[in-house]
Amino acid sequence: MLSPIMLLLLPQAAQVVRCPQIGSVASVPTLDKIGKREIVGYGWNGTACYYDRADYPMPAVRFREPTNEINNLHQKEKGDWKKVSIDEKKALYRASFCQTFAEMQAPIGEFKKHFGVGLPFG
Image 1 (cartoon, rainbow, N blue to C red):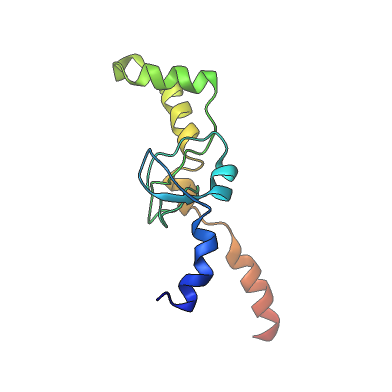
Image 2 (image 1 turned 90 degrees about the vertical axis):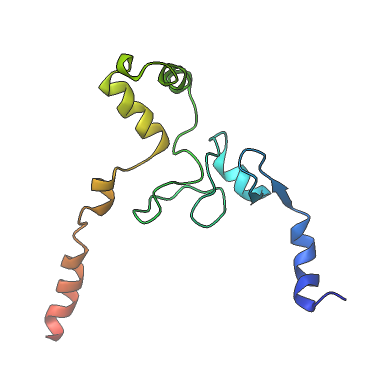
């Protein structure tokens, strides 16, 4: 006999599809949101989403959708890396990731807001 919780989840289970690239499960709305971006991994929570995290540096999908330029660079990177220029390597990186580790860990100045709110009460 199924528990009441399982009975509630059965309709949602019908909307789940398997991602053949990685073998994980992603819901149909999630696949609609990522568009044509390539699924390249499992992700930090098992869903096909993109989020920059320093503690889990490999998102499940690429940051940008593939273009002809990016596809040509992907073909070029399969060859000799000495033939790939620095700018092309940077373009490949930015196609897969939004921020570098330095950009993720840079201070955002949020302390100013907290200091400004706390100063009148101190």
